[in-house]
Image 1 (cartoon, helix red, strand yellow):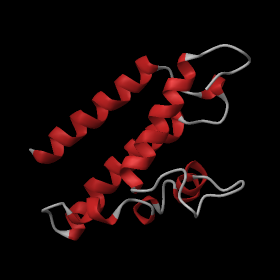
Image 2 (cartoon, helix red, strand yellow):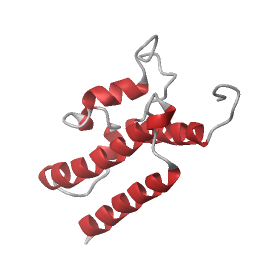
Image 3 (tube, helix red, strand yellow):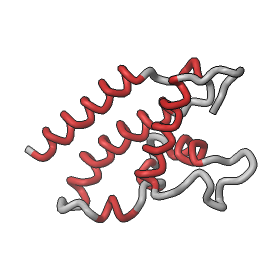
Length: 119
């Protein structure tokens, strides 16, 4: 995790982004399907945002106690917000990654949205 001989906070942001992608997809970057140039990040990027539910861990989607119609609207919006945060943090270019202050703002927006959905 060294870049040009310097440790960078952007590496931590990258790791956090990959962790988000792992937690919500249920996949690891080291899974067999990700080899060569095809990565966990690329897999999520290809599904984002239209088919995001295709890459989300099915256990997470089945845990909701709302009807499929209610879940698909509210849950899909939350999943897009979360995965967008993960993708922004794990951008290939360190200069294009979010800084942690913006990550915290994004997490607070997500938390606020969850509270609104829960009533």
